[in-house]
Length: 373
Ligand SMILES: *Cc1c(COP(=O)(O)O)cnc(C)c1O
Image 1 (cartoon, helix red, strand yellow):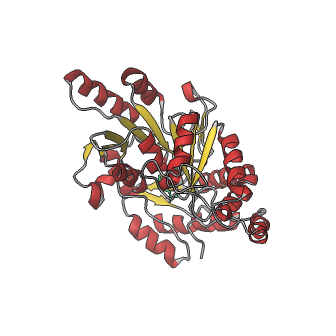
Image 2 (image 1 turned 45 degrees about the horizontal axis):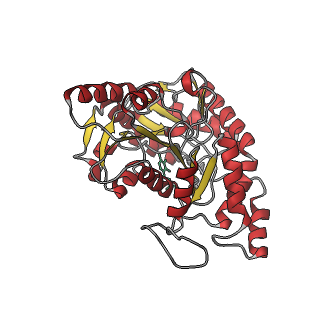
Image 3 (image 1 turned 60 degrees about the vertical axis):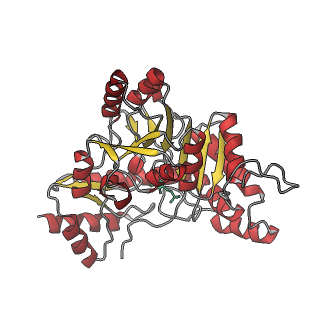
């Protein structure tokens, strides 16, 4: 069976885990957490990085610090994994779902910009915060969001859970990595992400105030290490030293992982180009990572294709139903939704484990061709 995507542990993961056990640092204290945060800040080009127990936890804290809360409207991508929206709900804020644009499948930031301008003119309620999600390893178009921030003072939180190490090639974000343009950026190290800590997340920011506050909130808002004094309601959102040890080992291989992903995407593109499918987004102004290689079928019959591929021992998966099709968000206010619906109707994710052999990739393409011809 060729799995959809599994962790690729080909570095010093085992050695570092052994070190945790031998030194007895298996919980929240220990040198790997700080080391992971420092290397991660370095790799993303952020001033500060705060490790968290999950990407969802990082988002929850980031949104709270950026001002999300009861009475606040937060604009978020309609086409995303549900954790992006749930983190907003945890704060008590309201959501405004924003459709995708067809080039990158990410939030149509142009549409959001025009809608905010329209509402502002009419004196209607506008978002107090934007959570932009960079889906499937591809950066979103930030230019309209930067304009919104300047014109209306609306802050930006980036959900970069799926797009660690992706970057912009042109425009005002040129040379920047995803997660470093908003006030706060969040990442996930769940087992299926570009790098994994088993489970975990990271929050990055250039603001020392945000970083200090995030560290405080993720540690039960404990005022000092010597007393049980807490000044606000905090969370147990710390990352363990064991998880961080995995993260440090994974980061040591980041360049290798990124190169393998790019080669993988190149080979898939070469093999799939003749088929009746649309290849994944790859805008001229961005450097995507092709985290989870996903295509659109010309005909909307992904369930049939998935079943056929499974018979051939190949695991694939549909993309997410847009949030407006999920029970908790079915009656949430939204802008458009047709593009997200189309991506869901035709989307298919192919096996994308880092280091997947070229033979396996060719087998995926051959089986897909048989089904689609
Ligand atoms: C994976 C993911 C998250 C949540 O990360 P966890 O570490 O699983 O909590 C949030 N947003 C998006 C877009 C994701 O893909």
